[in-house]
Length: 150
Image (cartoon, rainbow, N blue to C red; front, top):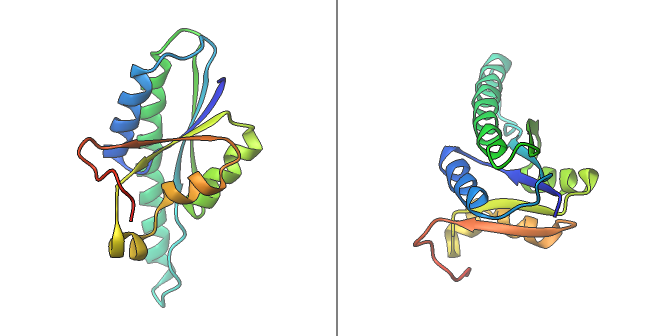
């Protein structure tokens, strides 16, 4: 494995995924691409300035998140690279698209462990990535998360 796309949603999953990746053994020349996806706002009749401010805030937060994660991953070794990116789009689609374009060997995502109605309503990025990614997918879960997906 030489190229790993790391998708981080928020601070909690960024920490969880980083801990997982730091505990694993990687080739000396591993390349990480850390990405945070900003989902487009819903089409509601609100002033454009509202959405602009919201998206700017989301971008600022995303850059800090991926930057922090990438810096920690670089500590794995002197030849390790970790690029930090913030992109816009639907997370599952963007993650799979980027994995394919970059020719990633693996994608790492987090999972909330949602089940039943909550998963139906909220969706599951990790399940969609598992189904559609062009490479191996590693799903990192919080300890104590439900093991079965309904």
